[in-house]
Length: 140
Image: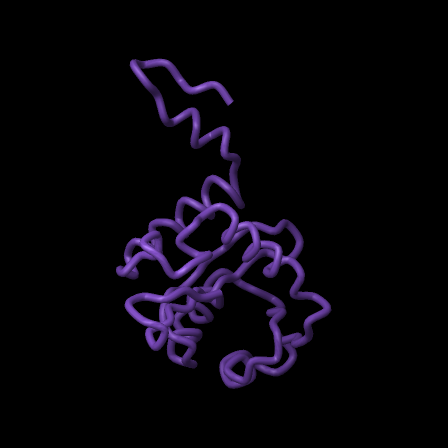
């Protein structure tokens, strides 16, 4: 998934990893579409004991993930595509190139952290309970 930073030439890619069984958003990395950026995410994932990586057929995966641990095919990527759709729906900054698009990578990282915690891995109700007006929690 990507969006624009300052111009069409400066796309910021969000590399994401989800748990195929639960749909939980495990980790992400913001950067370009290079092997170097993907390697940052994959190195962190290796520490969590991932047994199988499922991806599309983008070439960097075959360079970074050992044979036998990588399955490439569109037939099993529906979970991450669903996650991308939810992300576009939840955050306007990932839909269009207007004033809602962040110009800073750290803002995209913060948005991803909120998305992961309260939309994918938690509930929006939890977020609403954190917001309060005059000491009263918002009703959802």
